[in-house]
Amino acid sequence: MAVDVKLPTLLRVHAGGESSVAADGATVGEVFADLIAHHPGLASNLLGDDGALHKFVNVYRNDDDIRYLDALATLVADGDVISILPAVAGG
Amino acid sequence: MPFVAPTLRLSLAQYRGIVAHCYDGLPSEACGVLAGPVEGAGEPTGDVTEIYACTNADASARTYTVDSRDLLRAMRDAESRGEELIGVWHSHTHTDAYPSETDVRQAMEPNWVYVLVSLKQAEPVVRAYRIRDGNTAEIDVDVAGL
Image (cartoon, rainbow over all chains, first blue to last red):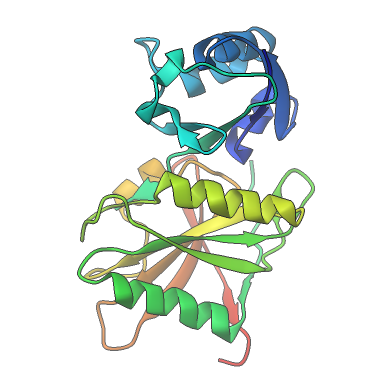
């Protein structure tokens, strides 16, 4: 499945400055693996040491937060848009 | 990387909208994001074209997290105009308009402007900062007509 992955500004430096990159996979996890294969600098920003989604990013498949779907096992379809958002937080 | 320090320029309506959202959020901290034009490698010019009042997902008087759905909506709206999100504001209900240790540690976007609104005194205090690699630098806030 070919999807479009939208990157927040802080991650674009790891993807040649692009705000949006194409990637392939049947699940969000596969899309991330493909993305990381092409842009290795993204790895530590997307996934934690345990291989799960990093707690400081939120990922949406179109309009849905994947944490409330099947997380990295969430299925994707051709033309889906995967949006990666930073956790904007403080005290 | 050196700090680039644009002046944050707000209209009076934007300024009032930001402050009003902070009072509306009491007793919790309130938060929202700012959109505007960027240049070069994503540096904001300091102009603000839209403010987006967001839900504090923490619903806390001590911390804030911008609701990610609100963030996504704001990001899409900004991008539809060829702009970017350029910063975030949040309130400090009982402390000064200065980034807390938590604010500095969790500041993820080196290009963003971090706006602090203190509600500690009778009059609100609004200040803005760049936060990069653990360093904080205040930038000017210019409110048209104030």
